[in-house]
Length: 241
Image (cartoon, rainbow, N blue to C red; front, side, top):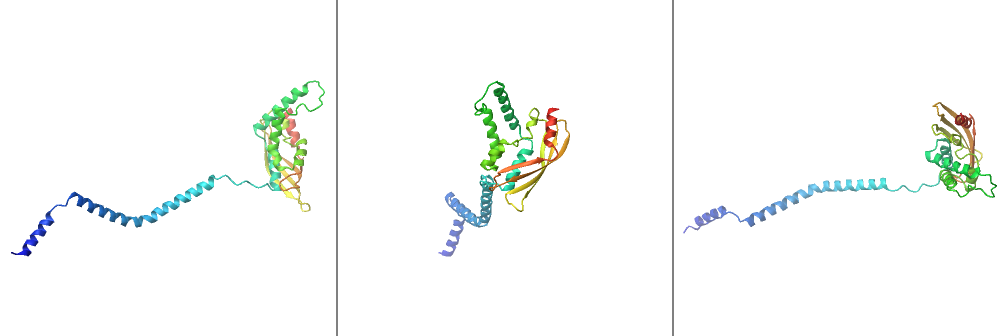
């Protein structure tokens, strides 16, 4: 008996036998596993890059949306700038509404021929609204005593009171130059250019000069200025014409 021939024939028959579905599936899974392992290493740098980009975007977004840190007190120059910007630019309509309501109430209160033992406006909603508005606009930039003196001076928006019956004018602070005294660090002088456009559309630039004393950092003790070119008079004339 020729064993070699029989073995050769047996191998041929085994090679022709179809593999079962389980064996095919097992082979496929092994091949798939090998392929995934081969691909995983080249993909890692890309995955890491994507993750770094995502983290960076998150940090940038968080930084941009975080509330700003509480600002410190203003400098002396910043305090003066804020006060003059508020006074020498035309205010918002809210100011006029508050002032009109206050004046109307004053006319009603003082129209009666009565001797008052105290100020009849004290405690009225209109006066409280006005005081609150003035405090919001100016008080942060004054010492307590400086603000009390400021309120009784004809300084709080005094350029706008003459225009109480009309809002069709413009007033804009164009230039402001503030200089600290060489001899006294708390003293400042300033000059300003203001463009005023009357109700008919005529426009002129007016110069103002003034002084301020700032005894505490960012807190004005007193401030006053001189209307060099007669801006206030011009506003008054236009309002009464």
